[in-house]
Image (cartoon, rainbow, N blue to C red):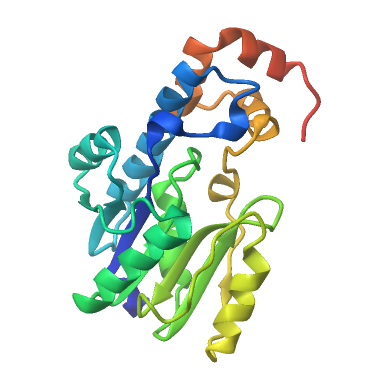
Length: 228
């Protein structure tokens, strides 16, 4: 796959002190930031290990996220960091297009089961530009990983129901999208049901170990609940 050369990874990160409001019923505010940073570290570690990326970039003004990014070799932008997921990714796409990057891979910071091998699969499946590759969330509503080349070839709009609109946006630009279903990328931790499912998996990820150590009562209760 020739077009992986020159593709930059982009991870937008909001203010982690106010992270994951939809988990408020399950996770105290004092712990949500820690959970978000543990999940983010799992994502950054996978991207750092993935071969074939030209560079790695956070879009964030959050000091904790920036510190983690520096540890894993990420640069960061603050432009667009306060403009939501869509605005942050759009700012990164503009930046990468201006600097001549061949393409952009963007993933969120809340998919702790992602692996370097899954990232490699995405890059290997990505066609020569112009091209668009996407891995949806488990419910085929969210867009949990997108590779696009050039970086601004397709307008991206994230939200609770973005997967099929993204397919349509690529096709409107004359690009046949490539779709991959990857189990690690598919699980984003957005709500208590996602967190319960993740707890039941008992993963050895940083987020999984953090959950077992810091919220044992929740994790034990989740294990006894029926699967999603």
